Amino acid sequence: MLFSLYIKNYALIQELSIEFTPGLTIITGETGAGKSILIGALNLVLGERASSDLVRSGATKAVIEAVLKEVHSEKLDNLLTVAEIETTAELILRRELSSSGQSRCFINDTPCTAALLKQVGEILIDLHGQHEHQLLLHADTHETMLDDFAQTASEVSSYKAARSVLRELHKQLVALKKEATEIHDKKEILDFQLNELNALDLKSGEDEGIETEITLLENAETLFTLSSSLNELLYDGEHSVYSSVAAALHIVEKLAGIDKRFDIHIEETRTAKSIIDELARFTRSYTSDIDFNPDRLETLRERQLKLQRICKKYGLTISGLIELQNELDTKIALEGNLEEEVTHLQQQINVQREELSILAGKLSLKRQDASKQLERDIQEQLAELGIANATFIVSITNEENGDGEIAIEGKQFSAFSSGYDRIEFLISTNPGEKPRPLIKVASGGEISRIMLAMKSALAKSTKLPILIFDEIDTGISGRIAEAVGKSLKKLSRLHQIIAITHLPQIAAMAELHLQVQKSLQEERSVTEVTTLDHESRLQAIAGLISGKDISPSSINLAAELVAAAESV
Image 1 (cartoon, helix red, strand yellow):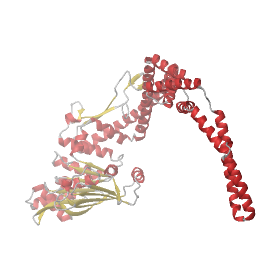
Image 2: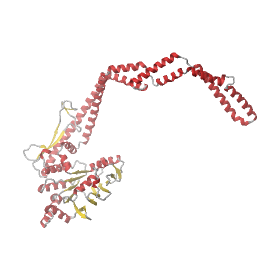
Image 3: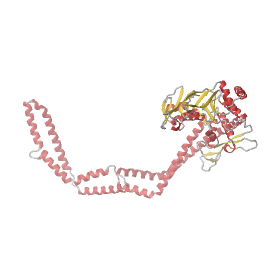
Image 4: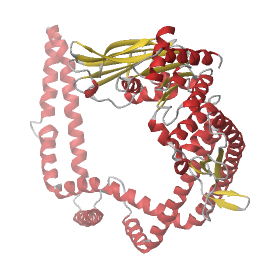
């Protein structure tokens, strides 16, 4: 239940705190007193879009905080867990709106997004106003209402998953056929390209190897001259480095025999001699291996030119050409395997279509069974609400389609997002009239009652713990208003109900009566909310009956209405 609502510096509200109770809460007040401001504040704390214009003039920010109790469910707790928000006994929703336009949202004092706040709000509270009246007129909302009543969430989920798989298989088949068509259309080009690349016998990194070998062959004479000179200097010359270091080692060894301080340099000198010896060996071997091969050089240059031309032609590197070669090979092979691939995929599609058809049929049957009960329930509710001769029909139709994805009893039907049914509520409010769509039949007052009848019929199946009605009394009065009040009170035994009304018959049903008033304080308008006791309730209800001039008879009538409401 909604336990409390705190509002500060929001529109005409300076600061107020309201505590609610289970059952039916009625809010009354003169037109313009600020009842819509309360609904606006609730909408804001439930994640609706905010405007800085709503911050009270002169204040830096507005704050709205709602405390809810006994509202936890698996869906809500999962949502909070994913968002890393601590789950506590109370659920605290807070919205702060600065005069600069910035908005901050909190759940249990943890910052969150407005989107998350809205998700949480949609799980907890059904705030029903004129907008929802209009939604009821649109057939696309009727499927959701029937599914809520029929409790088909599991069947709808299974259907959607199967339809998603089928759609994905269809996409794969279309893509496969498209690719095969492209391959077929370009077969000659693809064959030519593959043959051209195969003929080159490309190897990864070949271009770099060729460039290195060409450099060596082009500089063979220079390399031979330099390496020969190095060998002469290191080893073969009369005064070679090797012989000089060998003589030096001999001297160091003699010195060390006399002065031990030379011992540490013996190994260093030996190492130097070994390094020079190794370098000399390498140089001799290198010199003997130098290749003077103009024919090989010419062959490499021709190969390099071919590779450069093919790279330029395709705009790719050697590694890129090898990848292209593999792709072409795969594509050409695909055409040969196409028939087998298409057949296999078509078999999967047929199996999945059969599975989807079974799920769609089960879902439709469950809807049809529930629709009969819903028709009876709503007609009973409408009778109690003063539309005694109403005929309410849940129309369930299907769309035959030769290419449809649903196959039932030898016919094919279109597969919609949540089944293969088209659902629309039809009504006749007068005897002898054929039921027609709500938008073509119902008046404003009838729409209010039909919506209330829907809410009452769905009350046992809906998981929303809190229902808020704004303008539920649109277009009704007298005996009908009393019937609406009784219906709200009965509904409040299953859900916490908060309703704004201008009618005394509905206000008399309240278990908690809040009155909204606007006053002038320090030359500024301020909206306040008062919790009424028994006497002040009678005054407020009497005011709804007779206006500002409250008479003893209107007080007596208010008392009679309250007494009668207690027996409901």
